[in-house]
Every structure is written in C-alpha cells, then in structure tokens.
Length: 549
Image (cartoon, rainbow, N blue to C red; front, side):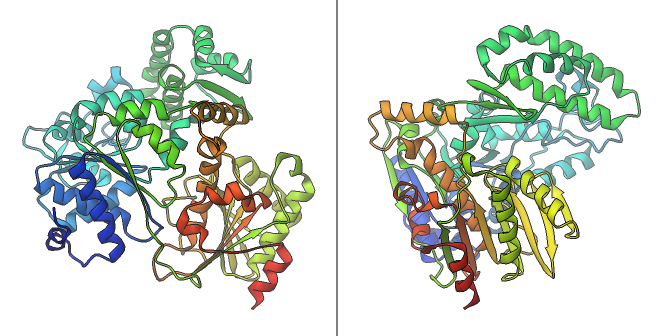
C-alpha cells in the first residue's frame, strides 16, 4: 500500500512526521505485527490514527481504536468526518456513559441498575437506526430526540461497523472486555496514549469511603478494619455479592419515588463502587486516608491475552514508557519501535532540572511545603500563566492548606477536586496532580507559559513497586526498576510538561523540581525527543537568574 494513496482522502497535506506515522501504521498492518510509535505532543498522532483507520476501512479492514477518554474519541470522530462522511464508525460505551436520561422522563441513574432498566422511558432502537460518526454526546442527543436508548443503539450497530471506538477500559477490565471481544476478533488495533495501559491497568480503581447507604456503611466497617487486603481475603469477609446487590437495590427502589435526587444519585454511585470489590480484576486493596484503592501487580500478563485477539496493531504516545513492557504485552509477536523527533526548536521548549529539592517522604516537612509555596509565587513574578503539578493529591492538599494559612489574601478558585486556580497580581497558577485528569490529555483554559513539576511521582505503593521490580528481575531484565516503575513516574512528569507546548508554534518552559530527575537511570527512562530539550541542571536561584535574561 503506497502512502500517497492517503493524500486523496485527507483535507490537508500531511507533514513529514505524519507521513512517517502513516507509513509505520500501513507497514505494520501488512506484516501482521505490532509497532510502538513515540512522537511528541502536537505532531498530529490522533489525526494519523483517524486517517489510517479511514483508509483501512476502504480496504475492507476493520479497525478498533482505543482512547483514554471520550473527549479523545470525539477528536478521532471529528477527524473521520473531515475525511469521509460515509465511514461506518461507531462509539461504544457503558450504560452510564451513554445514558439518555435528563432526569425528567426517567431518573438519570436508573440504567446503572440491571433490574430497573426495563422501566426506562428510552426503549430499544429501530433496526434501521445506525448511529455512524456520532461521538458520545451526539449519540446521546440524537437518541434522546428519537426516544431511543443510545447504549442499545451503539451496541446494536457495532457488528456492522468498519471502525469501532472505545475507551481503554474495554481493553483493560474483564467485564468490559467480555462485552467487546466478540466484535473485535481479528481486527487491526490502534491504541492512542498507550502509556495509560500500564498505569490504569495497575491502578484499577480508587474511591472515597464516605457512604450514605446503610448496606454500604456495613461493608465500610469491614474495609476499615485493615489497611491492606488481598482480594481473596476480602471477599471471604464480605460474603456473597447477591446479598449486597439485593439490599442496595431495594434501597434504590425506595428512593426512586422520592424527590431526593441527590441521595438517589449518591447511593447508586456507592453501589457501583462497592460492586468493584467483587467484580474488578485486582490483587491488593489499600485503605489509606479514607481512600479505597485497588491494584493489580502485573497487567502485562492479561493484556498479552487480549492482544492475541487482534491481527496486529499500532500503539502511539508521546511518553510510551519502557519498551520492555510492550515486549511483554505482545510477547510472541514482533514489536517494531519508531522514535520520531519533536517538531519544536530548542528555543521553543526549555526544560530545567532543579537539584536543590526533593519530595522524598523523609523531606516532606512543613518547611519544605513552605519552600514550595514561596517558589510558586516567585515563578509567578516571571510568568503570567503557570501550571504546577504535584506527586499526589495529598501533596496538593498540603500545599493549598499552606498557601491558605500563610497567604490568606490570595484568592482560590477550585475548578475540581484535582484542579485549583490562584491569582497573584495579574498572574495565575493552576495547581494539579501529575497523572491526574488535568495532567495529560486535556487543555488548561487559556494555556500555560511555564510548568513546574514538583517531585518524581512514584506511581504505585512501595510494596507494589518492589513486587513489579522482582517480576522483571525474574525475567532477566538487567535494570528491572525501569520497566517496573521508573519509566511510568517520568512519563507522568513529561506529560505534565507537555501541557505548556501543544503545537508546533507554541513556546514554553518546563521545570522538574527534584534532584532525582538528574539521576542517570531516571534521565534514560525519559522519551528520546524530550531529553534533547533539557537545558541544564541548576538550583532555584540560578533558574531565577536565567529567567531574568
């Protein structure tokens, strides 16, 4: 297949980098292998996935595209619309994601309870209703207008689709995979932001232990009795799932007739969270600071079984992480690796490592938090729009509490639990968490001029880090900490820096504030394109002098 064939299907002329990405995708398909593409932010990776899927559809090849979020799926759909409006592309999702209710004809949350779905006002779609090229929001709006269930419409159409789009949850989680697997067999796989396969595969779920449901409160007593559980031990304590489901569903039925929609929503949400304890694929459960977190030690194993369903595929990311990990995932199929240069000049993106600071737990003192706050305000004196990304939600909360105490006149504007904005003499800082929703794959309103990454954020609990390192050591890997966890920590930092430069015409400064970033094995784990933009290692005062120039 000649790459020039693509040009007639695109409403623009692709760049050299996009041409190379398309070449890799097509050659990979022809050879029935897997390829991993490392390419910087802003080169048009998502555009290339859409273009390749559209051309493969014309060649009668079914493609399955997995993205991290429905927002990213919408970008793919929009690109497909530009290329060919006759493509049979369908977005599939859960009952919750594709619920048509607006709380008038039917309570918004009723479809999350299987035994109550028959009472929903939105019925099965007609046989001729095929929702091609609609993103999730468009599908819900159109289905609602027709009085049809968007969820049923999507899954009714998937068997005839040329392109199937879904979130990575359908590749990661058992129940979701069982639902989609019969439709994707022998299709060509495309995975956008593939680095999330490991982080989301290991960090299976997290929810706050704050319940209103009497049934869930009783389960809470069991959960809180220990700080760490294996799944087997926990389920022995909890007993049969059917008893929990029956009791909670009866509470929900009682509330449906009431006017307390908030309580109804909260208990249904609790119901969905607690069901994860029985149904999610996790090894260990941690209870800390009223958070319940489920972890799987080695998702590479079951991802390998899932990948066997496809006839080959391409995985793309600006920060893919360890190559050894992807070799384990594809295992007995060849893996080709393509590392592309970034499109920015060295004047467009400058990255500094600060070697006079660390977020190691031994150094997390009140004085250390004060130092971080002082540095944020000093950097705000040099830039108008600053993004600050912390190693954890706990660290973010400590910083916001310190600012509130020491600078009571500084106005705070919380956008969400993971994004806080503060204003300072006409400048603003957006405070968030590495690896969080605002740390990658989303745009900060108004953009950023500078990003400060506070700390090397180790991605998993220490016991899990050591277990993964032991697994890779057992496979004969000479540097087992890199595929086990180091590469996934640096990936979160680089993704955060990526918020400052979103396209080939942007300019920005990135600051990695932790001396551990200059360790040779940590530097080596960063993407190749990113390493070329690291200007120097310095202390904070040296950085301030550089910024004055």
